[in-house]
Length: 362
Ligand code: SF4
Image 1 (tube, rainbow, N blue to C red):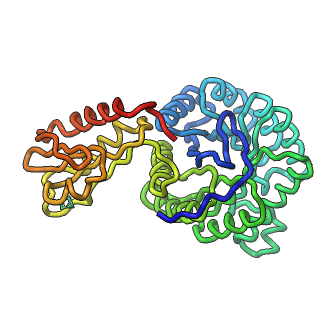
Image 2 (image 1 turned 135 degrees about the horizontal axis):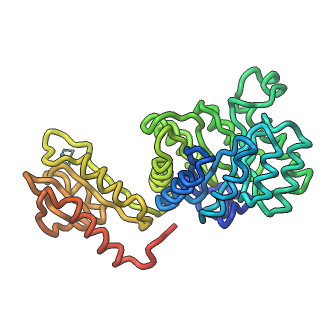
């Protein structure tokens, strides 16, 4: 696949995760539990971590949530970013409590002096910052100048905050320029990347539910990544956040940018279909969600084209009447009863993992 070399950006650190430079493009998600429900939020983060989430963001919408946030942060092992709007003092408070980073929105944080205060605490605590420009909340004067939340407006908003960081000699930050319009978002990130070399968090905001959100994000982020832009990403979905993580890795694998996790390929089915492909593929995907070993598992509806179409897969099933053929790297291994498909595939995956060294890969 021809893909442009990744743009060389400055490297920053969020907790123990490197972003930018030659670090792999990291996958993020955000909790959708009530942050005041500490137990539920910790549980969700642990599930996300098991699914491969590398950095998680938690909304801290008011001061009462600073203490619950600290409890959450102290109970999980992946870096936690506090998402702050409107009140810069909350950003300072969570940084004092050990937040790995704060995401602030330059459009609503209250101006340059307040941003400087947050920067200084970030520096003191060795924490990072995300300057998170959002097309829906650009500063009034910039919006008036451009008349709409265009790509240029988003870039100007971001660069204004970047200048404040530079004035303060603070460089442990990344930038996002998220819009819900895919084309404007691509333009914004492209223009920003032409202007400077700060690492970018890429995403499409308010992308939608699983199918529409994944397609919009795949289109927008796919084009950016193909052009070498993007150091960390979140696929925003109105769905279980685990699906954001799965979608993130699927996109990175599709572009050859990460070799991590199980890629379940399945045929679209047609009238030759002999087995419930969707059910088997979904079960396998759910069973292997926490497996970070790079493997391809195929579920094919029939033996006519199945093994041939999926010969690149490490292991797979090609359906027959009430049974199927288990194949490994294109070679037939044995006949399997339909009721045993999932069990046999999982056993095969276990064997393959044992054959591979290391287990976890980037
Ligand atoms: Fe149809 Fe068989 Fe191809 Fe699936 S593998 S799409 S069932 S021909």
